[in-house]
Length: 455
Length: 107
Ligand SMILES: Cc1cc2nc3c(=O)[nH]c(=O)nc-3n(C[C@H](O)[C@H](O)[C@H](O)COP(=O)(O)OP(=O)(O)OC[C@H]3O[C@@H](n4cnc5c(N)ncnc54)[C@H](O)[C@@H]3O)c2cc1C
Ligand code: FES
Image (cartoon, each protein chain N blue to C red):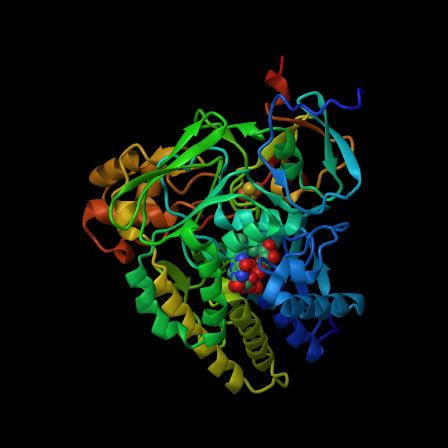
């Protein structure tokens, strides 16, 4: 328990942002509650395999092994010393006032707090490709998680498609591990990528690491492609039909397709907690509004990819900054933030350049045929969505209630950006004018029996 | 229980690339004996021997997970007792009785 008189701070998420936030609070004598869904702390990039796995940090995290080990060590030390109150494998489902509910392995658990730091990270940003509802089509991140946390490939002949830094990275990681990759298809053109390059030089070491990876992919890699459809049989993908930058048609045989267009911030809890959002043109998504330290509202702080997609290093810095703001607001001594703020500014320049180099394929999404499934959860098609816009107008929440897109079990996480694009295209308005989907609790569906039993 | 009853006829989709030396764990899938390795998620365990975890409720296609990070909820699988679990974030345990179809409608 935190000493009397000291405010209660809850951190949601134990990735780089959440861990560094916890560390800073602990250094100031605060004992935060840390709630995280993972089996072990580490978050996405520094995800740790379950007990009993034997690969070294170098094998798991490559060039980032040192950072991964440092972060895990910091966390494990705080835990061993009783400096944090840690709840692993626990999903926060709803937030209201100064109260949140989580589903833990022992059932539902309620927490109260005075201050809340949300470090919920990001997920793959998906665009619909005809056929993507088939089993055996996965997110790009899933392919990486399978490899990192389980040592497996999700298919025996893999096509990775989409755009963004993960595309090349995951391909290289899979190849190194011995997986068979049939093609790496990037919807971003060489021209887009060149346009992003000057800004990306804000972090030259990352560019220097990325270019040889791309070179290693050699003829597997194609830029500026158009994805036509995934051919499937009842088991899943059998081929991916695509056109190259010159418009020539190709079919690549495969039994697994990994799709992803960079990342999308996980902002559901931020929405429930009352954040204001702005549509960000360079990241093509709605992002929470905060000050530079991560303050969103009184007692509410955001950090990491759940606020801005700045990557793992940026998440560590943002976690420290959010905790620093939290300490300052509690009138506790807090370190200077100047150099961290400067560093974050540099990471942001890099990240925006990256977003420019690997853009969201808005035009491709607008052009998908009517029978393309947009909502994988409930099978809603682009045609149904367009039709509902014709009847009901171009407002995202209204389209959701008419066409059910965004109502499925992923709660719109994987369809809402594409839906917004289709709505905007049909209604001839800008994406930001379609409005933001309101989130609903619980942010993860749960067995209803459990909820009722524990209430 | 017969020992070597890997339902190879079903055909898995996952390929093991590393970490193959872990102890074996036995579980049942649709009444057949299957083997997994300790530390496998239920999703890994099932997709090593079968191509899907469930029939889709809304379409003709089957489901085999999508995000592997607890965000899409595509990977729910039935257990013999009628409960369901999220396969990508639950580790397989010896003796688990899993079903790709709800137990009530199982013949
Ligand atoms: C699948 C995937 C793979 C990635 N791979 C790479 C990579 O290889 N290299 C790279 O540089 N970057 C990668 N990234 C980006 C990288 O993960 C991030 O930049 C970095 O991890 C961000 O740190 P974070 O602390 O903000 O969030 P994360 O590391 O994502 O941590 C967020 C944590 O919050 C938890 N959480 C979220 N919602 C809830 C909730 N409701 N209740 C409880 N806990 C919750 C999550 O389980 C997670 O542990 C990847 C991102 C994704 C999504
Ligand atoms: S695969 Fe997405 S929640 Fe399990």
